[in-house]
Length: 174
Image: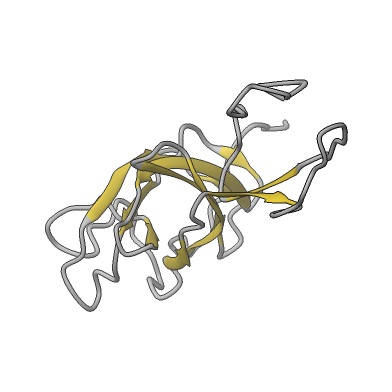
């Protein structure tokens, strides 16, 4: 008899780990955080419903602001690690702290699953601010000349260009 489609349970409670992979500007007030959750202790899948909370400081050493705690892993995922993203409020101080298996309650940590070790449940990162610059930054163009400008964008995705003034430009939105 063969059983398939189950999660292997270790004799130990799970030991979860989180790692922030990237932050990006999402809107003027929000940041997109890309992060990885790993299950240790020989678990072969990431549980469904694991909560992740985001703060602008370390709740183990102070009372930071909660930036978002509505993320929960949507379904069980095969493999010991998986990558997720969440949109949170942009921290005013530029730092984001993520905590896996924290429901973001009044007490810290407010865990959803029992764990053997909570020491690796936190990661932090500096939020990448959105910047756009042009190269060449300053140049002289003679009346009949032209120059190709190259945009360098960091901390998010550029959705459009709008060049002004329109006079003498061959393209206003490219």
